[in-house]
Length: 113
Image (cartoon, rainbow, N blue to C red; front, side, top):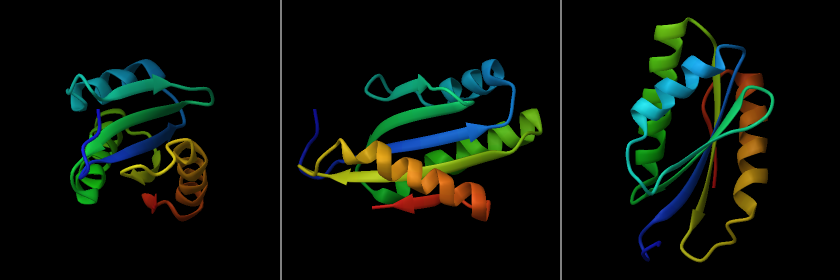
């Protein structure tokens, strides 16, 4: 359940290999029962979290990216999208996909609000 200050955040993460090991690292970083991790096609993971501050999502993404890249020596691209309060949650996936596409081009974590 979301409170009036929560933002629903979708973090899309894409790697070029090693899905089983990537999954273990993501699960080690995402610990709250309310957070959802889903393996998608094309070496992609969707991580849905509730955060009070937008900076919290970036912190989570950076921590996961650093852990995967240093442990497995593979490239990770991340796109993040937000839905504030009653905003339409269905926009999250398309915005996160757009952010991920931009991340692949720029090699930076991209956030779309």
